Length: 600
Image (cartoon, rainbow, N blue to C red; front, side, top):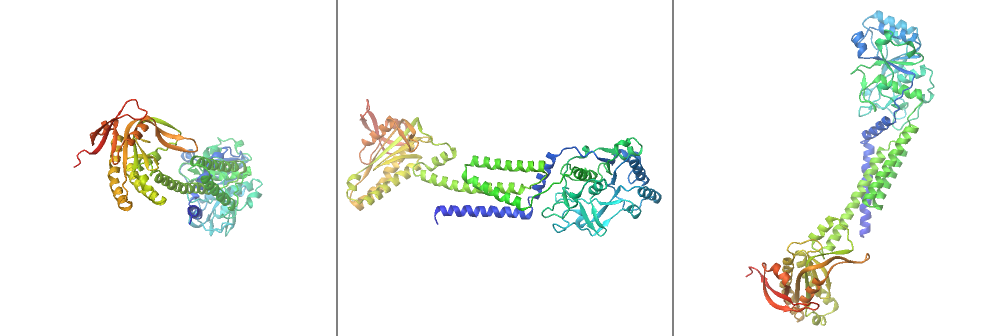
């Protein structure tokens, strides 16, 4: 299999794993918490905090409890409340208070029942008996109305005079109430939710809420609550002030009155807009939504799934088409557009596209493909490192790679130690050999040269026929570069003894080499054009090193005075005299390397 096919197979396998992971996340519902959080955020950001003016709440608050005594109260008080509200012209009175058992005073129960019998606009709530304490795990087939095994209702003397409604709460797995069942089927018939019953009784057009659009995976008649106000936004008056006449009658005329607990710690729940909201205000929010004619709809599940697939594909494509920074900017810009579009559609069209799965899946696709891409880039980088390792010390190559600096044309002037090497006797040998044998022999000798140079942190500048040029202290600074250069020369010369013996035995020709070393200033860098660049050194010091090498005899290492002074503590030298080099106006002192200090 070719490298291209292997790469394509790895990319395909990686993306298959990414898709499988995303499918698992979708099927297990692991993203539901994030989805709920996104829905809550959009609700909070789109709230008007201006509930419908027809709603008013009569609260059983701290002040009322203080003035009227601890709860439960005598039911004559409710009869008096109803008389006050009815005389003030209230359109509907809906209680979020349970009357499932007889009161402590039968006469008070009868007084309340007698007052209820005088009116036809009062709602007492009931509680449908559902599985698992009314939470969302209640089993129900999608698209069918929620069915209860039974229902708790007000006591018979009250029940016959009031309208029925349920006050069950639909609670998501994280404990928040984001929806409500408009109807629950019970053995006693279908019970509307309290807010819908109040709106119907007030004569509000509610046809669209009697058969709302179905939502995938949810019961028939389930409504996403359009939370548009907090507790403080609703007009609320204390129960006790209604009884003592402190609230003017005009406050209730033609309005829908909700009566419920507002004292701290009583009848509270978690909502998207408040962590602890008294549930009478949950009913108030649903009623506000119905009065405003707002209905939050969701598209069929297939459409967000299609968008998820498209975003994943686009995120993966951008990863491979663009460089890292451009890719991540593009993906996050696309994500921002996606979420901004979601928010705009929700705010202005009351349609909620759950794009959490698309966003997370797209980011997973980007992250996964970036990991695959990074793997191949690292593999290529390692390959390049190995290739350049044939010319530079592997330590230098890794240091250059870590620096991340771009290769630029131009050079710098710095002190270098330059080593020139030339093979002697090679010309006569090449006349006896076949071309391929000449190449093999050169490779044998230059393997030795390369190994010794790289082990001593040298840089192979070039091989020219049977000659070589090696730099020390470039491209990165190398401490004690003169000593490392002389050490390289000495190790090459000793290694050539084995090569010379092999060539003598095989071809009957004697070969050796001469090496010249000089330390001095030179210009080193990338020299050439933007199409072809050579890393090399130029200058008088380079010429001097070449001239020194040309003055060597077979098997001889000569160094300049500058190199000698820097390395005489480590090597034994013999002064061989002064030579006037071509292009020089004064002679150069030359020293021959005889061995290392302390060698026996």
